Length: 253
Figure 1 (cartoon, rainbow, N blue to C red):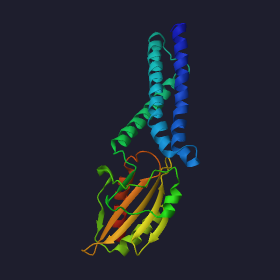
Figure 2 (figure 1 turned 135 degrees about the vertical axis):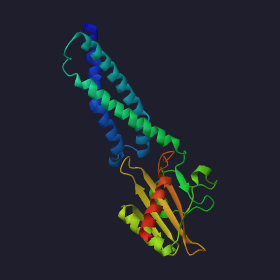
Figure 3 (figure 1 turned 90 degrees about the vertical axis):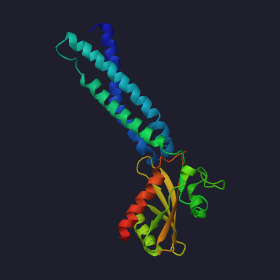
Figure 4 (figure 1 turned 30 degrees about the vertical axis):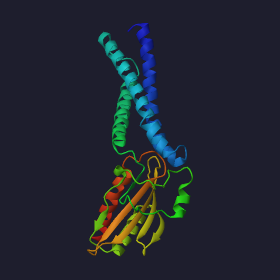
């Protein structure tokens, strides 16, 4: 390996070391930073992780491959690898994991409809209380959907073969067990209001559930969930209804 190749190897090896240490720190800060108030959760996910994270991981993968090729060339003329050769190998492995994870997350996230709010009743959705609207703050996504919901924002309601009171109690028990913040509650109106914050990226969603009796002595559960920030929720609010349904069914038997 000539002087030029040594210099090139030193540069890419240093880049690999930066990636080996820096990439885990980058993604950890992106995921946990919003909990500490360092950034908005939507910005940390969409821009810092799914955009810049992919770019940074790709850059360090390229650096790792360059270092690996240089090592192969060096090995052809020398029996032993240069000191610290584990650095580019380790850096390449970390960068590949980071790139694969961030790319897969981006594909899944952006394959969902670009909506930040979903409901089971597009004409007369459950209504949030004024107290919750004030709690969301002026910078939160608007809750004014007077023009109607887009088709992809309307999901199917859930029906139970149990009276509203039983579903209501199961709903409250589930919310408390999951440590969701319970807001306004009305047994008479069959209404439960929740605020849910995710551990990763501290993404906050406001949820209101409306229970109504059906002619078959059962219960219809209508659901409305709105992300406080971000142009899309990645499908998490629609998926949460399935979690709620499954949990309630287990509780009411």
